[in-house]
Length: 194
Image (cartoon, rainbow, N blue to C red; front, side, top):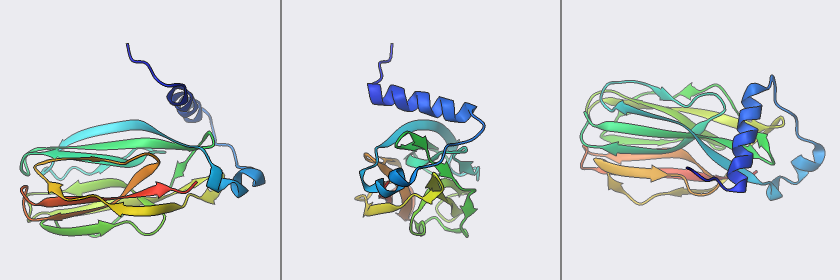
């Protein structure tokens, strides 16, 4: 039997309630001015595994953003995407419709979302000479934009056995890869400011 902390149980209940309700509440002026002291909760959500080379676009469902990614093997190996919900002071964050980037060769790829935007999807076709593109979105809560801060890049890791997931109060905002499956992959994360 799985046991969840009080915070996780609360977050799961809030996520369920928000998804079942017809709309989301709005933030008060007090909540907006206290953004720096906001309680931020991130709840794991949708996970999807695809064959990397198949060209299948993976996009986080509504209200979710990309938190992590793992890959095993060469271009015919599996890639898993980890999405999640964000709650700020008990309110679920709204995620805008995605905007897809232009394609770039995977073997020399670099992508960083625009400021205050988060990754919500990725698509790759073929081997390291194939193309990769990313989907980004903005986030809001109570009618105000959710800002990101403390951007950081991870150390490199071999793509063929890579796993990376956001730290506390972080979301994925970028990725860089060089070479084939034995090349290095770096991920960029940013912290939710509230």
